[in-house]
Image 1 (cartoon, one colour):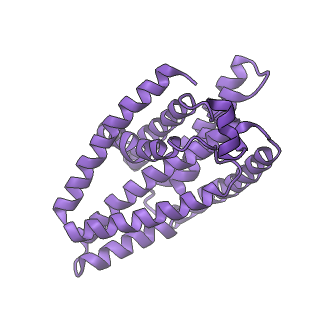
Image 2 (tube, helix red, strand yellow):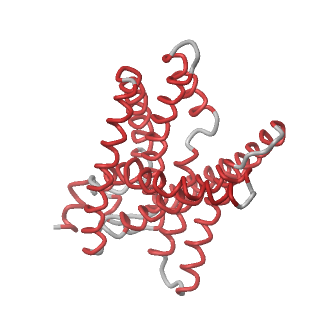
Image 3 (cartoon, rainbow, N blue to C red):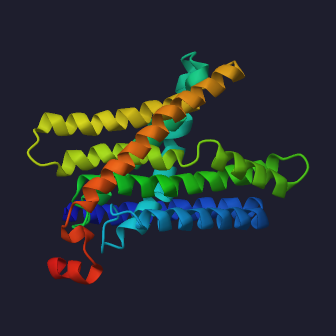
Length: 283
């Protein structure tokens, strides 16, 4: 645990909360009812995913604060940083003549880096986060916060642009987001977090190995996100591209989840004991 990172995390969380509240206000001003419905859908989705994650032996206990801060980093800090830097990156891609890549750069570049930074800050801010698989879990929660907030924005956008009904546009956009690439941000950030967790907490590894595994996993999440967002003139090629990314990301994520759970079950440290027992080590 680092007091410097812990203090910085709270400062960033405060700024992220301001950004989240500002975005929430803008969403509600556009359409109060649609905004509330979209937030309700997002809240239900987050609650379901968190409930499933808590059943995993990877979930660090009894550090209860890390999860809300991870959600806030994804929905507030990372979203705000991506909003600020996304537009200039898109413009650079367009001005370079590589127009088909502007959405890929706008998504993969600011989003994956800003979410991965959050994994690093949170892992170094809590004593109970001290195992490599904690990086996967923290990344997944950060990605969940980001994805929920992004879906709220897209849902409101779909509502306001639908020619017949705001509610129909909201439902259609949420349906597309939930069915087409479900959990994309969750799994991409978890992949980067897996590498960061190993870089921080693997035993008896040289510095070059730690840097390589962290940057390698971040690069993998970046490239998968880049490939997912890349625009093609042909719809058929676009579908093939999405299938290729899905066939890499989802099986890889299933393998990581099984591997992380196996490691966590075999670990008997205080991070996985009951809350009452764990407090003996943290007082």
